[in-house]
Image 1 (cartoon, rainbow, N blue to C red):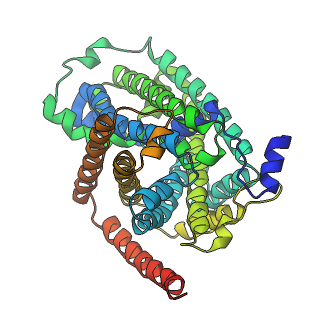
Image 2 (image 1 turned 120 degrees about the horizontal axis):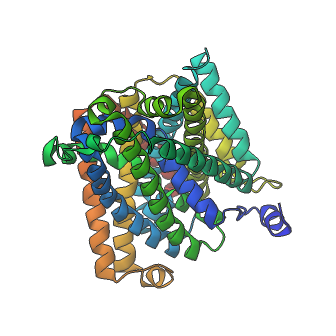
Length: 440
């Protein structure tokens, strides 16, 4: 830690240890996690080779969200951003519900990522599921508590390794690619493309991650928008190349029926080196997501503690490390309880996606409030479009978020019920917490 970081920590402030490359690493690392190993196969089953077109279409709603986050991140860079923006610019209760539901969503996200990571390693080694998941979560707890710069550097290293492993996979697939596997491109019709889009959208969730540690970003007003833009580009290129390699080597029919599509591609193109490559790729892809989500989970708790709606102890900053250590410990405790959740991936994915989409929608509405009622905040944004344009993008993003949430009801209603119960508990907590303050 340099002298600037140390002085910030002594004043009880969060350390600014995240650079532009760290922003890209956080966004790309969060987005390229479990989805790259689980979404490509069902996407090919629904759309055939045109899964690649569905991938392009799926970028559109994420661009809507990304533009809104870039604007808000450059105007108000703050840790726990999704909570803080909703609290400040919509209503304190809206901010609380977003943050409260994200406790459940972040817990589920960390559980599903550690679950899939252990399952991949179990293909090569016999591992006890829950104890190994606990060990994985404990590793990222330690990485985060010793400093944001350490966590960000670890994230950057893992992203570089991920890019290398993806490059090896794609380059090895080129000689084995059969051009006929891409024909007919529209074998499932346009209906197949649009059916695959809701699945493919999940590939890009998380590109805005750096906004959640806004106070810890160096020159956040300028670097956050640029970092989000670069994250979209890098993520889209990686997905398109990997998905194209999978279709070219396996064909859409075989790809759609595969339980481990990237492993099949690697085994076919690299032989005995395929398993080590995919295990390495899975480890760093899932590891980057675990690291980033753990980081933003703790910052959300930190922001809610600082505002007083959760216990104030959550807002304490460690004198030496400059990290919200109580919030990080609390996040780890939630993860330990999360090990008791069902191991159904559909259940867990929906438990993650519903709070995330609500967060996106609320941020979009907050952006419209900034444009309409906070001219001073709008004026200090380093990245800003005309008010009418921002409003159009933000409202479109909110509609997209609501639509995708409703689509999930067809898959499994249980996460909606569980999250509804958790939200009800939150409402009770909110009004009990506010009552003493109101009476005083």
